[in-house]
Length: 238
Length: 238
DNA sequence: CGAATAGTGTCTGTTAGACACTATTAA
DNA sequence: TTAATAGTGTCTAACAGACACTATTCG
Image 1 (tube, chains in turn blue, yellow, purple, green):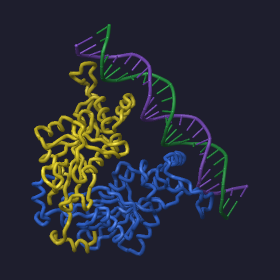
Image 2 (cartoon, rainbow over the protein chains, first blue to last red):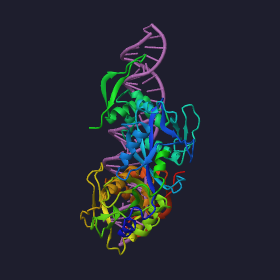
Image 3 (cartoon, each protein chain N blue to C red):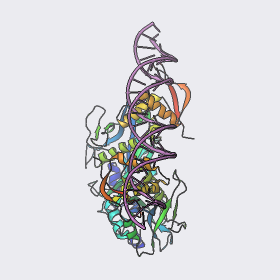
Image 4 (cartoon, rainbow over the protein chains, first blue to last red):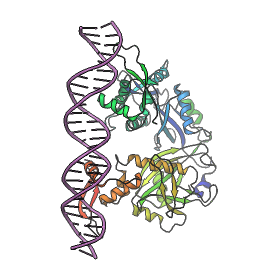
C-alpha cells in the first residue's frame, strides 16, 4: 500500500468500505456422512433459507478469535479445530451491504457435533454431497430433502469439502473428526465419508501405520458384539 | 450472521470496523530462482523496509478486481495468473490502524517480470529462500543482501512459496511461470527452483508426458549452441 | 460351535529414482 | 570429429489395490 493511498484512507469514516465477517463451516462425520451445522434464516433477506453461522469481526479482534467466538456463541461449540478456508468478497454476495467474509472450517468429533444440535429447532446438521471433481454439490437434511442455502453459502460449503479432501491423506485433519481413542475402522470410515469412495482395508491400515501418526493404546473397543478392535490414538510425527 | 448482529451493524458508520486491502505476491522464476516484486517504503512507519504492493479494496470492487488493479497500477503487470492465497488479519499487523489484508499470489513468466522492474529504483526483484519444511525464510536482493521486510510480509511470502510447492505437482501452476512455448528442461528448472531441490531428468520427463498436459509444437529451440530441444506448449487435460 | 468382524500375507501393477546409454546438433 | 546437451531403455525399490486367508471374540 502506498502512502498516498494510506493518507486518503486514514480517517476510518472518510470512505465507504466493506464490512468484514467470519462464516463458519462446522463439520463432523455423522453416521458415516459429512455433516455441517446450518441455521435457518427467520427474517428477510433469504428468509427460510439455510445459512452458515457467522458474525462481524470486531475492531480489536483477530480473525481466529472472531471465528472461535462465533463457534461458541452462535453454535455452542468449543474446542473445534479451526482453520481458515477462503475469503469470499463478491460485490453482490449480500444484498444488504458490501460484506467480505472470511470462511473458517471447524472440525470436531461426532459427539461434540450432536451436542451442539440439541434442542434447537432452527438449527440442523445438513448432509453434504459432492462429486469426485467438486461438481454436483448438494446439502440435504438428514431425511434427504434438499436444503436451499442463503447467499453464496453453497460455494463456501463446496470449498470446505474439497479442501478437506485435498488435505486428508497428507495432513492430520482426519483425526480432528474422531474422539481421542478410535479404531482403524472408524478412521477408515471418516476417510471414506470425506472422499465419497470406499477404500481397501489392508492398504489403508498399512498406510496409516506407516505414517507413524497413530499409536496403539493397548485398550480395546468395548460393547462390540464380536471381536473388539484395538484402540489407537493420534500422535504427531516424531 | 444473525439479524441481531445485522441490525446493530447496518449503519456503515455506526461501529468501527477493519479496513480491507489486497497485498500481492507477484512471483516469477528469474535466473533459476524464485523472485518476487518488492517496493521500498519511503515514509514511516517501517521506512526503508521492503513491502508487497497492495491497496484498499473499493466498496464496489470485487477482491479479484482489486488485486488485478493493484498489479496493473502499482506494479505495471497485466496478465498474471492471480490466485487468492490467504487472509491476514492480526490486530497489530499494521501499527496505524486495523487492516485485514487478502493476499493474492500472481504468477508470470520471466520476461513479463523483468519488464515490470525496468527503470524503477524503489522496486526490486527479491530472491526467496525457504527450507524444505517452511522454516528459515529469507528474502534477498539479487546480490544476496538480506532484505528487511515490512509488517507481516515475511509471513505472506513464506505462505506463497509453500502454497506453490504444495500445488506444483498436481496443478498446472508451473506453466504460468513459463512462456507459451517452452522446453522440458525449462519446465524442470521451474520445478527445481520452486522445490529447492534437483530432480531426476528421465523421471521428470515421463511424469510430465504421462500427465497429458503438454503437447509438442513440432518446433525446436533456436539459438542453442548445441542440440536444440523440442518446444512444448501447455494443453489442459482432455 | 457359528457368526461376524479384526487383522495379515502375498501377489501384481504402477510409478519414481538411478544410471547408463543413444541421438542430434553447432562449431 | 568433438563438445555438449537432448532424449531413451532398463533395472530396482517403494507402494497401493485386490483377494484370500487366519485370528479373536461374543453368544
